[in-house]
Amino acid sequence: MAEARPAIYDHFPQLGRLRDEVLFGDVWEQPELSKRDRSLITVAVLTALYRTEELRGHLRRALRNGVTKDEIRGLITHLAFYAGWPTAVNAARVALEVFAESE
Image (cartoon, rainbow, N blue to C red; front, side, top):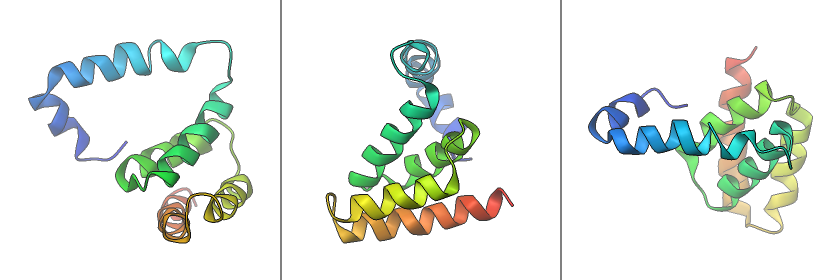
């Protein structure tokens, strides 16, 4: 995730433990949804809620989980009509940064 995050978890270790043990250790490991599907859902929600910093890390995770750049582009375009134009444009900016990192 974002580089500034470890400092947060140094000062709020319980948040880090809950993230590691509950969110990524349990919730993301449940069999009902693939990690790829969880990534699509998470990116959609973070886009809709305008959660820029969290979106950046989850876009990286989505790419690692097999979501393609074209699928991310399609998701963001689709959300423009349901979550609002500014949220989609913001997500597109973040996606371009993440895409550039992966090239």
